Image (cartoon, rainbow, N blue to C red; front, side, top):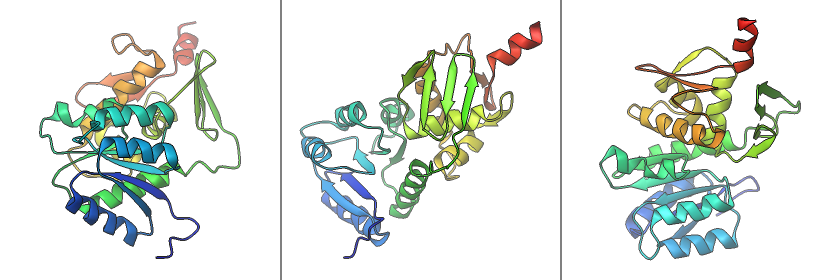
Length: 241
């Protein structure tokens, strides 16, 4: 099969061969280059040997569990990760997000939905080709939009693609409240219902990395029952004078 010069390379980590083969077939139809791994150790080995544009990672794996594989990948790379899980509890389903995954799907899932999410994540991850350099500064927080970098008090903070998109989406309009569903659509690139908790997990991770206390926030505020808003602390200090 002709993969094409622009084909993205995907690491598919799934121990059930039937599921792996079905997902790989759908991805290859979309002209993605797919490398399959059937256990956690093989996944780590493949990731260390090759460069991948996206990882699809099952949570329940032999040899090395998916949670550890996710940590290993996240320690080395900000590559987009979609976590697959058969667990039904919301707390279990969001474990991957708290470890740094960008998205998750609960089994059984539609291969077409998975491909849609892959497409959205890859589009977002490779969308920063703006010729001009745009930098936003809010007190101690600096967001380099074109450079895809974030700094707090001059120290660079490592964010996943989803965390960066979430922060930039909120920070472009200080004071404006964004609903969870609106953020799902803008940040994750699709509008499937029931994934608002995904945004909550990303906000939790983002706050931890920025050092933003949820009880006394500097930038990220929760609007209970609605969603979130971003505030510019320098604007508040100016208003008080």
